[in-house]
Length: 255
Image (cartoon, rainbow, N blue to C red; front, side, top):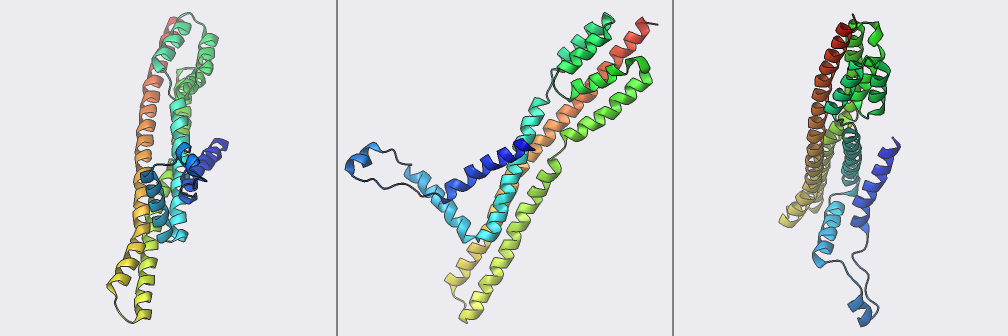
């Protein structure tokens, strides 16, 4: 949780500060103008254009969409880091545990699993810790703890999917409210002015555009995380089958 808030503050600073900072500092004299490195003109225009559209769309709804983006990216980055840290070299782990069990060194096999990072190693440790209770108990322990690890891998994805759905909804709501305000302006003016209608519709549609952009960005991260979780779960299942085979051979040798 602490990492999540640190990432949230960092991402929020990177996204919000450039939008509201000044474009550049004016030089004091000709010498300072020559020696001072200024921001490229195109970059300045891009930041100012983004800032203009953000403010034109109405800061109330645009800020909510921006919050969805910041929170979604914070969760996505935290999940990416956690899932990458959860990746284990299962072939090496199986080989080391097999060597220990072949030497009837159950404690050594447990130490190997305990010293290895990731959910697969945790499942191995739970199975090896109950090796003296019978194969049925070991299998049930592996299945039960595998479900626990799967839930941990999928944590946070529901919140990310919430922000994916919420961002365009907020954008559509801002658009509807903007259209209502545009028609109110037309009614107050008593005349349908093309510039008034076009300007009101453009401002109203900006929230939808930003909401859809946020949803697309977060959807890309969500699909990557889902594929990563599926890969880890498949790896866990294959490794668990391999562990059961190793323990079965251990029992057969020690009958």
